[in-house]
Length: 395
Image 1: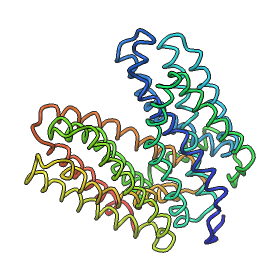
Image 2: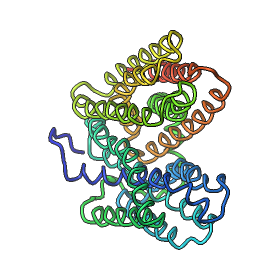
Image 3: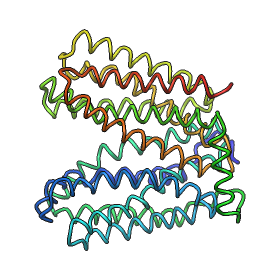
Image 4: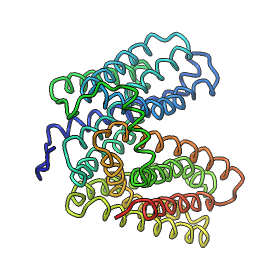
């Protein structure tokens, strides 16, 4: 295990590239979806499956990929996942029906998620807990930048060369990361195991019975669900309820993303100095404060424009940016020999609850005259994260 204070920038850059494959693949197809309805003569619901099943695949695959990396090693599972992603991208090019495209996207999701899970496990293999949180903070920036730029790239490619160009681009990008991984990524799994399913079940039982792991995992889960809820509800509040333009929403969202990245930067700078628990303790407190400000502001000025929605969320976003990498580092550090399994369970919980709450907020806002339901759910989720930390994570 490495505990040096210098940043291994070469490996860090690779981990960022590996992590970016998943969110890039997820978001880049969105601008082309209206055109796919015409191209395949399909209904909107079927085309929407290219996105929703991708999300489902990302959630479920994390439960498989993490344990596989504990069993066979980080490097072979990462190489296999990237190779599958390349094959799935070019299979999508050959799709002649929306069903074929959906199947290709599901396979693509399974492989593209590798980077998210295995990058966290690799970091925990190499670094002690507080230093791992710092490294995860840097890598997490990829999870923010990729969704920001992916729709722009996808829109340009679709408009200029058609939807097939999107899969060519992602396939070539993933192939480049595959070659890079083959050349640079070492095997970091310290102890090989041949116990297979027995070891996986033992690791899973041990993690799920450990209050520390549950606490860290729930902090990251509630925080991620809060973010997914905001993404699902904020456009409706700003555009439909407050009658502001989609452009105004987009500008504010870019600013929020930059604030979140600043929080990631803070995690990279401060986590090794102050420690995981101190960073989480500060983060959960600030997120609850920001959410409470959001509820009060929404009650006082429900139609005041995007600032009512986004300004409190920026307080939350900065705190989340430095808290989430520490929560993940805490979760994968409870049983270091099962870091892959821990990363997979945590990722599954994050995406699973996030999908549920984002769907819930859509139903609640549909019958609301203000954005108060969004502000209240954000507050509840932030409070749940605070409670999970102070109740389950012992000093």
